[in-house]
Length: 209
Picture 1: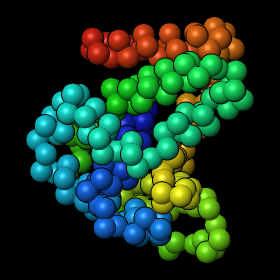
Picture 2 (picture 1 turned 180 degrees about the vertical axis):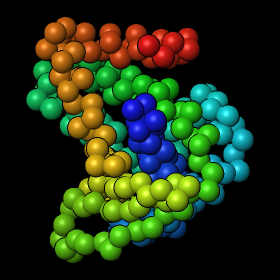
Picture 3 (picture 1 turned 180 degrees about the horizontal axis):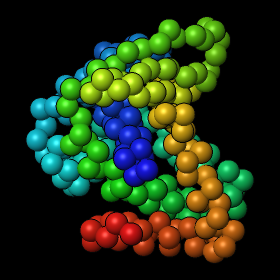
């Protein structure tokens, strides 16, 4: 089960971390954008020894500098929290976004070391010209085994932004909604902040449980 949940961060990095280097990519076309940046990031990961070794400082730097500017992680977090988002103060919202981001980085950073000889096959892109929320569908061939990998994007004045991913039928936002909701129901919004903070401290100290 844990191996399954290693896949989402591979997807996130494949989708996002090449974007800052892909300034010439057509951000007005989500299909073209995903194809361009995923190939760039595959090439980068395969040659970056620090990322492959799981260096958390280098990975965090990469996320902050090259991933977040091309995503809407606040939107991702807001959708994970659902109606609870509006009950949080602006400061709580900021803390949850930051702690959730770090949780994903720390939980899945080791998955990057697994990226070696994967190839990507894209399914036909189906969207109307006036659509503002679309899904780009692909299949990653991992040692001969197909892994479904989809990206959900929405259109912004700055271009298309990824805010959710789907691996093997499991969307990232849905995967965390129940956990977040349970924490808030039992302990309130501050309880969720505390839970995420403590979890990050545990992972930083090498505790997986």
